[in-house]
Image (tube, rainbow, N blue to C red; front, side, top):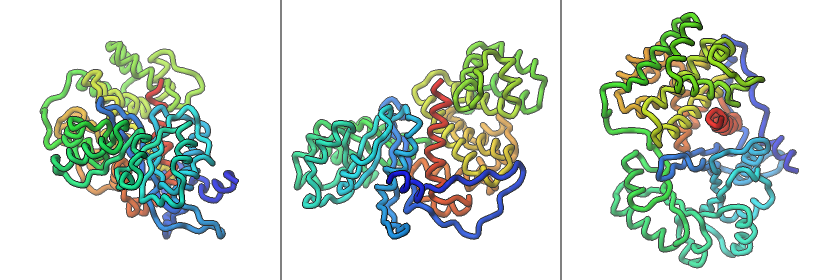
Length: 432
């Protein structure tokens, strides 16, 4: 039954176009699923990505050969399929309506991935024996809920919840403080996740008020704080320029070998599962020969995220940037050449460097001197890359992005798959 359902709702991915040949534009984009996955990174107080939250946007039900599937059924099938062969090192939080909690026991998720179920919506207690359902689910999963009014009719329920999701309703911190206090009262044993925050400063304030996790638009600063670059950034950028100029491999290798830490990090990245090499790479000369200049530039660019040292936010930023970059590359695979997809990857990667280094983006781009289309896209000039960057950025906040899907000639089924594949790829690149 499950395989039949997956075949109905998960069509095969599009076949990539030949290098240098844009795919033939489609006249219209018809979604193959009844909604779009909403993917959000969940940050803990140390600014690590603790989990990824997934829900399916609550669109109208979709009929397929006489069968009607709710968005929760599709979500559970999609996540089950994606975890069949791969586990995520970060946890997965799934948003499921109260009435659909019994559906979860019909699915079997990869035991290597920690899964939390977050109930949402208005529960109908006449239609569900909540205590029996929770007894069944809590043997395998952590259970949470959105901060709704369920506690008025089921006050004892709060004792059983491991997580409360609070969606920010007001930027007023006095109001937020009161809301957090109320959440602690109704679910005294639960951790608190504040969602939809709009800045890094707001996130820090939420942590000070007692939140355990936050999500939202956290990668922005009110203004740049510095006008200079770390020495390690400048040294690495010199090597990047040598690679771009197709300098002899021996000269590039000599520059890299002068910095043992840089050498070791590069070998770790190019030997990761994300590159998919049959044999691990053991030395720098071999890496440059096997990878080639174009891919070497990609993997060296990752090292820019370690230029400030081992700060807690650096790894989180790198994971986010890698996911964004890979998502852009995959989303454009059927329309752009391989070389253009490589530039799309770099556009996504560089789009968070100014936040990491806290320098004006214009100053960063002047120092990096990337190809013109990357620079133009990151300076908000309209390019063919612009819709893909906007799509990747909006996907991190859960949308809405239906208009951008049409511009990128993607349907919801393909984009749902791309989001998860990009996340898994980034984790595999960082795991080695």
